[in-house]
Image (cartoon, rainbow, N blue to C red; front, side, top):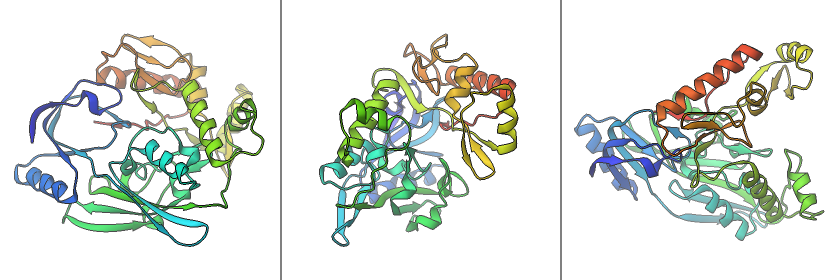
Length: 337
């Protein structure tokens, strides 16, 4: 147990805040001990994964617990299917690389997403036409109310767009310890329809892509437009892509004929990055904070010296300008502490 511990290297924004207490849990028993300590001393608890989806606006006056449970195991179901279980502390991208090294398909479109495995179900992470729910089987959690272990299956997680039970009524009650995925061993479902994957594959001269080729294309695309948090502090996409009624979208097309949208029944998903860029934020910097010059959806700690409040206030200005111009409410994807 450490006191007045700096969390600067534990959040990808690189915001310099302190936790009153800090400890690291490498086993379930250590985790339970830390939780009991917090209860005995009346401390609020913050669980840290990869730190890639969090914005600290102030010091944390409680116990921060770094989840460092590690390990990957497999259960082969048949000639084509394998269950792969990864502990919460495994780095997400390294886990994707592990699956590709074993020629297991299903995660390739999710390459290079920052964070750890344990946080992946919380917001049903997704990219390039794939979401966690597409390959998710179950996750084991620790119930903080009684310190008992529980298994959540696919249906119980109630996955939605960047959403799950762990962000709704289960928020603050459960800690994800491990996640199990069902992956393919040979009959892989190649997804090239979303985003710039087809174009990137053409640039690479690939006409019959493997899952490894898809991963390489996704990595190239992400690296070309997204800043490396190790170089420039950021949390990836800061806002969710808003979903609006079809009637509202059709009304907007009267004034903004080039507005992109992805219909889904009576609603349309609109790219938040496009909305933000149309409001003049792409590449704009105020003080220590900026909207990334290649992807307006990403807010960056431009100087490395930004406070969490500066970043939060910057995002509030973006939300206000998008609301004023388009009548659309942007929602932050990043957790605010």
